[in-house]
Structure formats: structure tokens, C-alpha cells
Length: 267
Length: 159
Image (cartoon, rainbow over all chains, first blue to last red; front, top):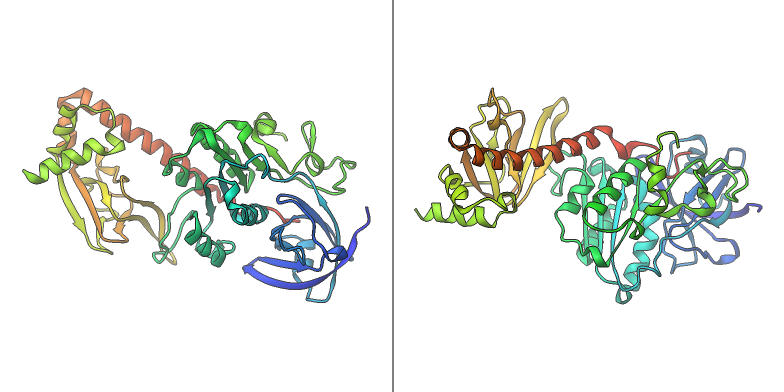
């Protein structure tokens, strides 16, 4: 699968090291399912897997939120509108939004893990009648690392969305502590809730355990895994995770698929 | 007397004391008093004697530590939350500041009074200690996660 050159439409700074890039999609239409990712290729630098972070109901642009921490992502950061990025995709599994119809949806995100969940939140909001209550619990380092801060404020006015930070200065009005603490403060309908979790692996592991402690079965908890994905076609084996290739079988897995693998330290 | 009844009623409804007998709650309420704090007021101060703990009824309390560069908020307690563990063990000295970030209504418990009652009635002491231990365990686990700075690691787009 060859990369297709896509023009950069817009670059928006999100945090000190994180930006959102909108690309003109191949064929003029961005078709993807929330949770999927693209391989973005910067000519002369290399290719990285980046989750879609835009609204699936707005196909006029392909949106990715990227943290600039390596050579390829920093090269992406240096691109300006009009320049080209190679795009392959979309790849991978999606958040189980059809299986969640009629149920409450609890979204737990950590740090940049909110980005792959944002398309699911857009979908849940625009199809709110098909779902039960939507809850978003988001944890991050501090007030200056809250991703999509303005959007989170709007969401908090629309549904139960709360942000907690690990530590803060005296001006912070929200909760301080780990994201699972927000879960303990809520009454969870264990029989009718689907949980979508995305963030660093340690955070997902602890969230999944806390959700199980609240009575949500592992097969209704979904996590989005991340490994070094290279070919995105299940051929190179770099993203092998136990019996799975994350690029093909994932990145979204139900927790009962990966619970055993989470406990193998070498993986 | 009206305060005492309020405190007993509040303890009966508090999830923290769930499962304790009315007699035990009445004993505890004898060490409590209703307290109010204005926004910005300190409930506890780092390095000072830890004589009390607080069960928050309304408002929010920030647990803060002073570090180079400014004051850092490391935890927060809201309604039904508990503030203060240092009264439990010698040298009974606060390790952090506890500051009301909004107007706060709380039940303030006299630590020395509670310790005395717990020594006299070991079943009461056990029930109390069991509840404190559960909260301390959870906070210790949470603190470890906070120390790991998990959100600062890699993440999507980290290539």
C-alpha cells in the first residue's frame, strides 16, 4: 500500500509539544471509524502511526493530534499549510460503537490518549439518542497539559465530563489526583456500561482493574494499545503483541483479549 | 446539644462510617464539633501539631506542599472526603498544608479524644483504623501512580 500525498490544510498548537494537523483527505473524503489510525509519512524522515482525532461526520479533512517527541513527529511539526504528507490508511480496529448502542458509555482517557477517543466522543454526541449516559473522565499531568481544553469546557456543559490533574498550582479549580479517583466518586451502572479507555499502558491497566472492581466485566472494557507499528499490514511483525498484531487485530482490544498479556512483563 | 445531634446524623449518613454501630458513632461524635472555614483558610499547616482530622460536609479542601517555584496542590478532598491522617501516629505533626479552596463546612474531630476512646474500646479502635487504613492504602497507590508521571511517557505520536 503506497502512501498518498495529502496537503496540509491547517496546523493548530494544542500544548507546548502537541499539535493538531488537518490534511486534505485522499479523494476529498476522509472515511474512517473512530479508533483507527493512519501511517503518516514525512518525506526524507520516515513514517509514524497516528490515530485519527477528528469528527468522522466531517469527512472534508483528516485530523491527527501529534506529540512532537521524535524525529518524524518533529518533522511533521515543522510542516506548513500547503506542504505534503504521505498518508496510508486507515488501519486497525475501531471502538465498539455499534455494540455500545443502548448502553451507557464511560470514556476514560489519560494524557494524549484523549485524541484517539475524540472521534468516538463526537460520534456518541451526534447519535446521543442511540446511547445511554455519556461520561468522560480525563486525567493528565497538570493544568498546562489538558488537551482540547476549550472543547472539554464545552463538553462539561453538555454531559458528565471531568478533568483531574496529577498536581496543580493554587489557581486550579478542578480535582487533583489520579483518574481512577474520579471513577470512585460515581455510581456506575455495572450491568449497562461499556468503557473505552485510552492512555499510557500503566494508566489503562489501572483503569481496567478499577472498572472491574466496579463490576464492569472485562469484555465490556476496551483499551487502545500502542506498539512500534511499521508496515501496518501485519507483515513485519514489529507490533506483535502475544498472538496479535496491533496494527491488524488492534489497536482497540477488549480487555479480556489482552488482560493476560498485560501481566507478561516482557511484552 | 443540637450540634451533637447534627454530627451523629452526619456520621450515620457518611459512607466512611458505614457499618459502625450507633453506639460507636455516638462515641465518635463526642469528639467532634461542627466547623466552618472561609475560602483560603488553613485547616492544617505543615510542621504544626496535628490535633484534628476533618470530615468534609460541603466545599473543597486542597492538600498542598510548598516547593521551589511555588505551592503545589497534590490532592483535593470534597464532600464526604477525609482530611488529616497525621493525628493517628506520633509525632502528630502535619506533613502538608490543607487549605479551603471554597467555603468549607466540616466535622472536626479531636485526635487526642479519638485516640483515648480507641485505646479504651479496641473494637471501636479497630473499626476506625480499618477505615483509615483503606483510605490510606488507596491514597498511597494513587500517589505512586502520580509519582510515575505516567502521562509524560511516550504516547501516541511519540516517534
